[in-house]
Length: 211
Image (cartoon, rainbow, N blue to C red; front, side):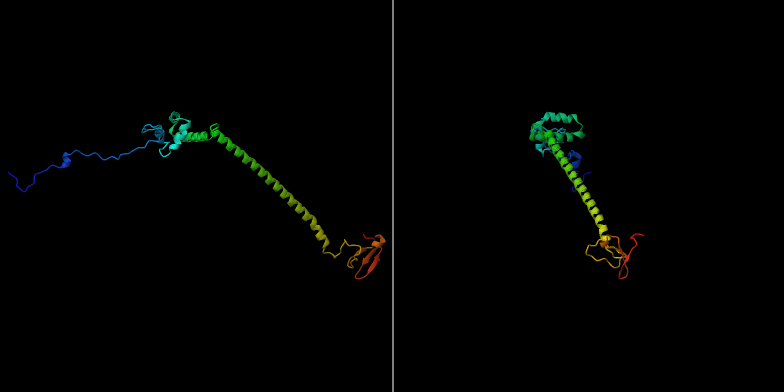
C-alpha cells in the first residue's frame, strides 16, 4: 500500500547516528617557578622548588642560589619533611642575604651586633634603676628630717603660749613680774627672798619655795 504524497519521509535523528562530543576542557597554562626560570629548565608538576619560590619573587631564589647553589637547596629540601621546608627556605634566604651584606661573618655578625645592643640597654637599665633607688633614699631622708624638725619645733610653740595663769618663765631683765603669779623670786637678794603676790600688792614670805 502506497503512502500518500503529503506524508514526509521518516528521517533518523542526528544524535542517534553522530558520536558524542567530548566535553570542553579549560586549558591551564602553568608558569614555571622562579627557580626553574632562573635555571632555564622545564618546571615539572611536582617540582620541589615551586611551592617556596613563586614566579612573582625571583629575587628570593636568586639570593639563596648565589650562596648555597641550586643542587644544595634541592638536596636539603628533599631530606626534610614538608612541614619543615618553608622554615628551611626562610633560613637559607636570610643567611644568604646576611652573607651578601657581611661576607666574613654573615648572620653571626648581625647576631653579635644585636647582642651588643642588648648588653648596652641592660647597662642603661641598671644605671637607671640605681639612680631611682638613690633618689628614693634621698627623698626618704628629707621626709625624716622634715618630721624631726616639726617635732622639735612643736613644744616651743605650745610652751610659750600656755593656758594656765598666763605666766611667762622666760622673761628679760627689764620685764616686770606679773601680778597674777603666786610666787616671784627676787633676783636682787640672790634668790633667798620670795615675794608672794596677792590681788594687787606684793608681800614678803619667809617660807621656802618648796613645801
